[in-house]
Length: 195
Ligand code: 5GP
Image (cartoon, rainbow, N blue to C red; front, side, top):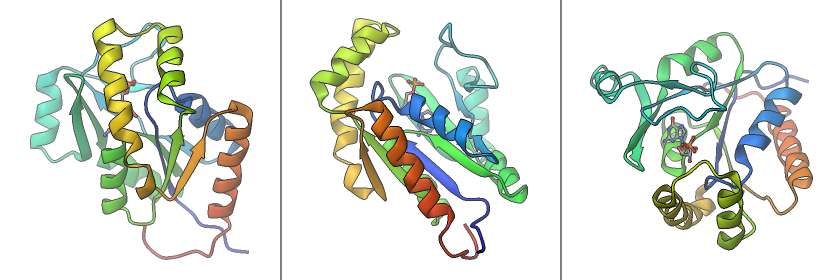
């Protein structure tokens, strides 16, 4: 059976929904899958590495890339810029690698517009209250950032019906299994030309 080659799997979820853990699991389980490293102007968290989690850069550098047309999509939120570099996706496609994205809902829809065969997967938190609890436990945000992130989560949930799949993360292990099943199903679909 022919296998779809360089597919794009785009994950979105309000922060604190378990999306990063699920994306890491996908990268571990599927050989030939690579993470799309976004550019951002936000400060690096102590657990993050430049060139691994993000390309951390100054606002001037980011704006230069916007002017050069280097982004397939970019957004500004919480006072920071985030963007997906087009060249990196196209390099993966040329190498027959599958790219896994972790972007906000608008970014996901913009990636689908540029690459219509992208598979969009929304990870839904059990509830906004639970999300608040998880973010407080994670303890990486200031109170002001936390408030903005909750507000944003409410907006992002309104977009979930525009995704190809919605996976509810009530139980992390079940959510991981469901995501893996979705990817296996998409991988075994008939090959179609283009992306
Ligand atoms: P965080 O600051 O928690 O790493 O990310 C904040 C939000 O930015 C998350 O929703 C994350 O998915 C999103 N994000 C990360 N990279 C990109 C990107 O390249 N484009 C867009 N549109 N959103 C991104």
